[in-house]
Each structure stands twice: as C-alpha cells, then as structure tokens.
Image (cartoon, rainbow, N blue to C red; front, side, top):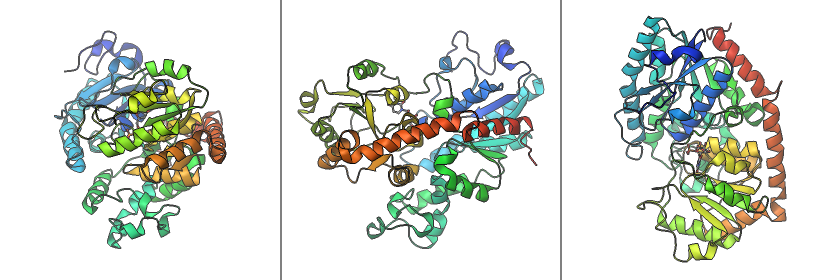
Length: 466
Ligand code: UDP
C-alpha cells in the first residue's frame, strides 16, 4: 500500500473530496509507468486543473508518482503485480499484462464512484500504452481521449511499418541504412522506428496500438509550427480532433515528476561555470550502454576540454551498479571540469545559462525541453521514435547535430562544434529561433494556446463536436 501523506487524499478518501471536487467537472487521467509517459500526463493534469477541472490520476503502483508533489490531484493507485518494468524480455507482453491487470480495478472503482454520484466524471484521458482505459470508458459510457507523448512525425513512420514489412524491407539491411524511404521523406531507413529490432516486435507494437479503437480525440504534446505536416497527415488518418497543445513542460506548473531523486547540487555547480560552456549529457530513463560505449563517452567528454554534466543512471551501464566501469584516469583527468550524477533536475539544468548544449537520446520530452530552452543538441538515438526525432532535429529543424558513431574523436568534434566552433553558429542561432517560436505558440492567440482552449470546450461539450 502507498503510505498516506498528510494533507493528501487518495481516491477512496471521501473526506478529502471537498475543495477540488465539489461541482467541478472531473477528469480521470490514466498514466503509464514509464517516466517519459508519466511526466507529460502529470503535466497535462496540471494544465487541465488550471482550467477548472478536478483531476484524478489513475496510475500503476509500479513507478507511482510522488503524491506529495501534486496536492491538487486525487490519486487512484492500481495494483499491477509488477515489481519493476520488465521490458527487456518481452516488451509487448509486459504491456499486455499491465493492461490486463489494471482493467477490472479501474472499472470497479469508477463504477463505485459514479454510483455514489458525488463524482461527476466527464471524460477519461489515457496514455496510449494504457489502452485498457478505453474499454473501461466504453463500458461506463464515458468518452475517452488519448494522450500521445511521442512526436507527431514518428507516427507516419510507425504506421508505414506494415507496408515496409510486406515489401520485405524490414529489418533494414546494412546496405539500405543511408537511403531515403520514398514515402517518408526526409527519413532514411536508419531513421525508421524499430529499424534494428526483429520484425515480430514492430508487428506486436502495431497490434497493441490498434487496441485503441474509438477515442473521441487525441491530445498531442507538440507544436503546430514544428510538426504541421505530420499533424495534417494524422488528422487525415484518424479523422477525429487532434489537439496539439505542447510543449506541456512549459505550460504545466507542477513540481518534480521524476521517479528517481533529482540531484539538485548540480545547480550550484552550474552556477560556477561560464555562460553556455557546459555540455549536459543524459540518455533518458531507459537507454542503456555497454562498458566500451561508456569508455568512449567518457574519453570524448574528457578530450573535448569543455565542462560537462553527465547523468549516468544506476544500472544504465550493462552489468554495473553505477559508475564502477568508468575508465581508469577519467576522474583525475576531468576533476573540477565535470560532474557525474545519477539523475538531474533536467528542466532546471536546461534552463541554466551555463548550459550550452545537450547530448541526448532524443526522447520526445527531452527534445521539447531542449527546444523550449533554446539549447542545441547532439543526437544519439537508441530506439523507437528517437531515430525519427533525431533526424528531424538535425536535418529539418536544424537545432541538432547527428552523432555519426560513438567514438571519442567523433564526440570531441561534435561537442566543440556545438558549443564553440564557428561551424556550429548556425545551429546555435536556430536553437534560439526555435525557442522564440515555441514561446509564441503558448501566448494568447498562439496555436497551442488556442488548441488548449478548444480542448477544454470539446471536453465541456461531452467530446461531441459536430
Ligand atoms: N529526466 C530528468 N533527469 C534526468 C534525465 C531525464 O528529469 O537526469 C527527465 C527529462 O526531463 C524528461 C524525462 O526524464 O522529462 C525523459 O523523457 P524522454 O521522453 O526524454 O525519454 P525516455 O526516458 O522516455 O526515454
């Protein structure tokens, strides 16, 4: 059981329903246990709360959000019977079990609340990986809306996978990697999601995504100016309203959404560094590397001679607890110039004036956070949508440099180009331009500002727009 925190109430606690709940239209947001999905869902909750809705976050007990950080929400913890994300063995099986384990609990708890008639639940909003929530909504006669926390540009590539399979083009052969995919310009075969995994996984992922059959709308954490072409294609494909209301990291006023403890000492360290001098390195919550890749990264950072802030998640280096595989001599060589930590307050880090570049795996949250702060990127994708994001960052939006391979000399060139060399000036300027455009989206009259208002109207109209 999750411990009760003073001042906080969970969904079962009727005493606590008072201030947030009375009279307010109530939304149930069903969150996923992945960090990159949980964060935008909590951010969405915070944004919709500010628009006057009461919010319940239904979440698995695995990777529970910290309730104390979100006193404005009610929470509905669901037993999932998992002790950890067991995605390495069979990701799709893991998702299926997770959905199966949560379905009846959500349905029973919401049925009870509806019968008690003190909760006016109007809509269920769910993460795309928590597709069981759609079935629950249907059974309870409630509309459902999906939150997509990936880039819009990823989806056309994802949806094209069956045809690419049928044409015998997947998994991608080495000789094809650099070639353009005809119907998915500007993606090359190497930029396709699941280009390096077996055919079965991508088929299973597609099959799972098809479990969502009748959503009333889709909320996309993106901006129209950034992904207009993909959003237009998706609108034609899905034929339901799509609300592009991002970047949620900028609009949400919520405290930390991290599962791991954020090491805030790094901000004091950043305070002592020169403006725009630091390369921040983080590969998100899931990517892993081997010992050799760790060593190349370490020596690339050391030899770049730039200050660095490097997040090495515990367990992210295969076979290690934390940093015991760092190469001999690295700590001495970089003493005073670098900081290695387990988890950073990333939003704060990217907003810090000392940070001049972000070496990233190109997860969509990291991408949006970097764009919002005008921080140019080094792109090193690992899986899924990250390949697509990397291509768009480097080739279309031109705010990132693609890391061709993980070799120390290549890394040094990329870091110096991004932060100091004349050659990187265009990328740095473009990152700044993007930041201004992103800001504009959220101002009165901007595309995300308008989309959010439209979303609120849509929900208030029972998700029924003619
Ligand atoms: N993050 C963080 N501290 C870190 C590393 C990551 O707070 O040290 C956050 C980051 O700000 C982002 C999320 O974790 O919001 C990672 O999501 P993303 O979509 O970028 O990647 P994923 O973890 O899903 O691969």
